[in-house]
Image (cartoon, rainbow, N blue to C red):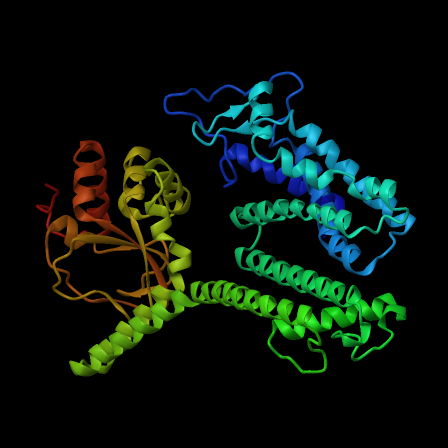
Length: 492
């Protein structure tokens, strides 16, 4: 079980080491075509890499402060006429951390999105920051509440409160965080998206509830407000009760439940309700669209399987196929669906041949080298054959080879069993028909779920033709195990 310390070490250190190994999908540092990458990138003095684990930890710390700011800004704006000294001190400490981050940003290298190179020139870093987010960051960090005390003893001026709401600009960091987490393979994509949607909904409910309460609190006649009609002296009521009431109204309105116990009582509230309803239409469409996309994406593979299964069943019924053939068809479709995640053939096909060869060698070489047909053959021969083999799964009681069938493949059993006498894992069949160019003398049928390697005869012939010694070994092994074969049988 991870402790908090271990988690941050994993997230900020080990996790981001993946970027150097090519696993991450963040703003990666990519070399230009033809550029050498066998040297370590050395940044200029006093310049910090954006991938530095300590800088990542600093960003995570700021993220916690952003979440606090997202909650406290609307709350202070609506519910607190006079900012308590403790909260005032906390706000200024948080502002100081973001001020430090502004200064630090002038020394953080960035990735040029045109060349994908890491820029560590101080002048370019400064120009880029000053021309993009510096003004917004500075305004969101400026201590407007402190300045307001010079004009108003209690610092409760509405204008300065509105300016303090600029701190919500910091929320763009949350969007960047979720964008990174969605690309991070260490986190489940479905739950990351759900967390993002939940966060958006929670903030919308909180912000709207606070703003709606502020309208009622500043209305001249408290009794002609949405909350005053229910709680006449609401301003004297407990702060927690007022906040919960505002959130209750916001969530019931957002979900279009609308019990009717809290409703607009004046023109200001009616106007806000109108715009809030329009906002709810967009937010609801956004939430439903995203959730639908997640659910459909998660079930598309199952739907495709069901459609294929139904089509095969209808085909068998329409053409009046025998029962055992229909069962073989449907069993094969079911097994293919179950083994798709095991084979990952599409993923493997997209990899370079060298990687595919290494995977095939690791998985199948120990099995193939024990097959009697290749005992004594060179490593080079077996390695070349292994890299060209295809792994297939067969359900029980399925015909792999039919009697008198002209064979084009050799089959090696990895797991399971087939009927030819009784062949089990590590044994081969179909070799006589391929090497001697004769029809298959008998049917081969599985007795249980079997994983079988399939090797095309053309690949075998082309490979052993390159080494006469290996060809002699293969044929000698064939004759020793099957002495009844005519001695004139040989490869081309």
